[in-house]
Each structure stands twice: as C-alpha cells, then as structure tokens.
Image 1 (spheres, one colour):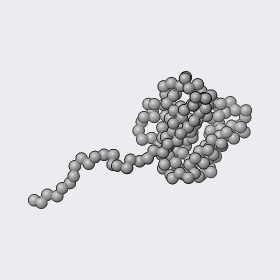
Image 2 (image 1 turned 60 degrees about the horizontal axis):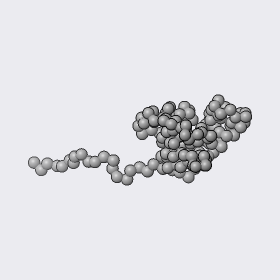
Image 3 (image 1 turned 180 degrees about the vertical axis):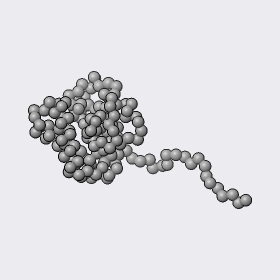
Image 4 (image 1 turned 60 degrees about the vertical axis):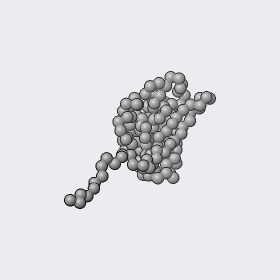
Length: 161
C-alpha cells in the first residue's frame, strides 16, 4: 500500500500557512475542511491553505508538497482512527461509526490515488470553487529539473609544468 507523506524543501510553509505540517506526517488532500466555505471569506493564510494545502494527519496543519511513500495496514488503520477522532472533535458527525466511515473513505481515496504512482513522486495541488460553488482539486506532479540547477563555477585543469 502507498499513502502520502508531507515533505518540505524549505521553510516556506511556516510562513504561508497559519500552521505548517511537519515533514514525514501522513497526509491527505483535506478538501472536506473547506466544504461549504464561502470563497469570498477565504483570505490570507486561510486562502493559501484552501488553494494549495495538503492536510497533515498528526498536526492537522498544511503543507505545499507531499510524496508517495510505502505504508502498511497498521499505518492505514492508525490514520483512519486519527482522522475519525479529528472529525468527532471538529465536524460533529452523528457518531463514531460515521466518523470512522468518512475517515476510511478519505484514506481509501488517498491509497487509490497513490496505488499506481512510483514511490517518492512529489505532488502539489490546486483547489478552487467553480462558478456553481462546487469544490474542485487538481493534483500536479512536480517533475525534477532536467538540467543542472547550478552552473559550473570552475574547472580543474592539469598543469603541464
């Protein structure tokens, strides 16, 4: 099984989100957190979390990048339990069974999304509301650069003397 883990290339997330997820947290899209939101009221760091934030499953904070990682059934079950407890604390589901069912659906979506994707593939997301108010997500693969990032500064040349 494969799931998503938070990664960081720098400290940007700590500045652009209200709270930044920590590297290596298991993660999901987290679109449910914005269901029913009014796009006009999403401003600043909350808007950034809405537009580009993955949801870490330990801190329930946001991250710009996630990567595909190996997981097992125990990790999957732990993520479902953690997420269901989050639903109970913040979203008032009818009961524990419904919270666990919704959490399992979220985790199954993530596992299915990752299933045919190579380990260490890096993703970003773009989330928006359409003109009818429906929430849409676009998942984007971050391709590594094909050219060297740094220019050669010097060259070692043997001296004939």
